[in-house]
Amino acid sequence: MSTSSKATSGRLWDKGGSLDALVDRFTVGDDYLLDQRLATADCLATLAHAEMLCRVELVSAEELAELQAALGSALQDIAAGSFAIQPEDEDVHTALERYLTRRTAAGEKVHTGRSRNDQVMAALRLYGREAVLAVQADALELAGRLCALAERYPELPMPGRTHLQPAMPSSVALWAQAFCEELLDDVQILDGARRLTDRSPLGSAAGYGVPLPLDRELVAQRLGFDGVHHNVLAASNGRGKIEAVTLDALEQLALTLSRLAQDLMLFSLKELGYVSLPAELCTGSSIMPQKRNPDALELVRAKTATVHGYASAVKGVLRAMPSGYQRDLQETKRPYLLGLAEVALMVRVMTATVSGLQINDAALRAGMTPEVMATDRAYQLVLEGVPFRQAYRQVAEELRGGDLSAGWAAAGARVSPGAAENLELASTARQVATAIKQVAARREQIAEALSALAGSPVSVLGASWPTAAVAPAG
Ligand code: ARG
Image 1 (cartoon, protein in one colour):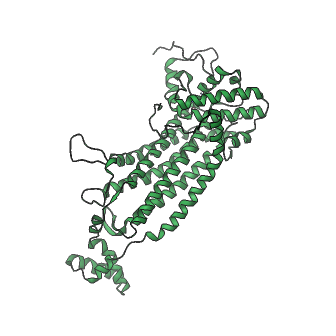
Image 2 (cartoon, helix red, strand yellow):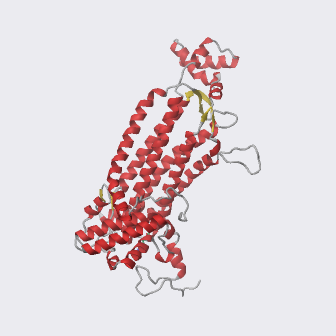
């Protein structure tokens, strides 16, 4: 491979030398494509940084006004899909600095007191915070649908299974509320990741701060962060770690979704028929005319493994990372951004599935065969004074002999627990939703600042959220 081609002219770090074209392509990779989704966040962070530079008198009021106007037009271009990041830009941060510099000489000042890693971290945290909050809200929506399902069928029995074999009486309500409760746990796990994300790294630069009187608190406040990530080296080393924690939390949510999907695939088997999946969510086969396949649920199951891979990939990169910035960290961006989007889509697929689920009353009742009642029957005997092990053997005998006396009917009449826990779940859901809303209040100022600059509503996540494809939409 030739090493003569040059590919560095116009780089932020261009000092007149040249870079081999292969190394250039290799180091840029698809970062410039992924960065499309960070463009709004980078504008926002640049706006707050410029305002702070003005406050500490490193940028004049006129220069700030020019920068604000140029950022406003960048936001409009981003919204219109016409803000291009070229491979020669390397990343959105370079593209934006160039964009600003083409419009105002003050563009040459916006990098004062920042490193690109600072910018990457700030943009990723702004984006990640929004994405996690969106996923939390969607997961709460799904939990709500499951709760509603339980309320609609408080008494409808369902065979409970262990080892996939009929085990004990359960109910639609018990099953649906189980997933509701697990989702609430996942939302709270995600909140731990959200809190770590919700700190401003700006001012950390390449991990060692800068010799300027930057006002880090002001920037954090302007960006609606909960506070400053204080130690500059810890902030810098937080790159990758926050991504890993978030992906681990997303994986927990994905695991819940995957198991919910798995249950629904089993329950909708022709042979069981407890539920029917919404026809519009099932796909067909190119060869077998009768097929209605749960491809979406299968992909939820498979993508849970992908999300695990993303979390592992990030932790793998971090494992041997010395302190301070290294380019390895770029490799954590893709799994992070794709993991967020993938899980957001998975939650929505499961919400659509649960919302359109048909519950088949007769099949569920028919599934409540005597064997499902065997343990209940044994406990009935225990309550009559028979030692448990004797009761156990007696029930096994009764089942073998097909001698299902009146006692069995009574055992079968029990409705499994479930419905009573509704109230408690609803209050947990409310608490979580309130906590999320409180964070939302802090972010409103950002939405307002962005929208005021752009002249129309702008969101950090952008119109294509959630999209798991690498090529930018639009
Ligand atoms: N795309 C790079 C990343 O995500 C940007 C920072 C590059 N900085 C550097 N010193 N080469 O890490």
